[in-house]
Length: 331
Image (cartoon, rainbow, N blue to C red; front, side):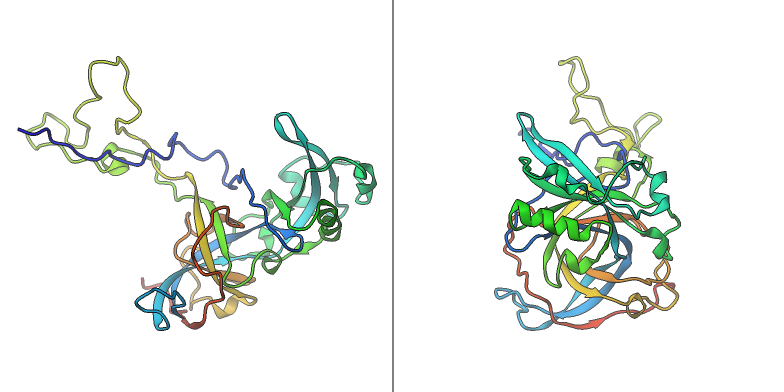
């Protein structure tokens, strides 16, 4: 008889499958862009999902020019505040921190996130004049106290790259935003593509059947049915990492590439359903509608970034004809 074959259980793209170290996603790479200097990232909070009717602008689609229904994710994006400017220089090991300039007016709650430097001067950019600066980034923090649906006060701090223009133009841009608020419109426009990173919904310690989708054993098996048949061959004398086993499921950092921003709104009241979003409540700040789903449950911090992969998707604004605000309480 021919040998029976089956596909591998579970994706090998992610490892190790353990809990994320922090709930604020970490971004290791930033794309180079052209044009005027701007921040290349932002952050918001996931409120929930709904659906919208848009005019399909894909030329080769069978529904091109017609009205189609699409799922959208609603994210509340209150303005962020720039706490510091960070300069990088090139070393034999890659980028190395050259120095930082901190703002004077900071949220007092930020000291509960990290030790804020005591002796800092907002006008100390002159120290870095003439230095061989390779990259300019800012340290920005969220303002969760402005969000009704988020039960926390301590801001989340993250690094955002400034892209576009020359290094001198980026430094001048950084001087202008230091200590000030930046909004979602300073990062992206309607129709633009973004990468979305978040920590997924945690499901705890789960068995191999739920974690990898392996089949149940026969009912004639002794004592157990939701275990795996064996741990592999006799040699090599260890359990290979490809063997599906029980362990942590969910609460992993994941990135969705090239998600389109359908709409940027200023008033959250216009998007909130009657009774608010489930497990979140009412949206009271600026918001964005992202095409499709986004990792994580409601209230989860979500980070945006300029796309690092080329895409054939259209980055033109989408014509929206209807956005559902029906109550989700009975869903």
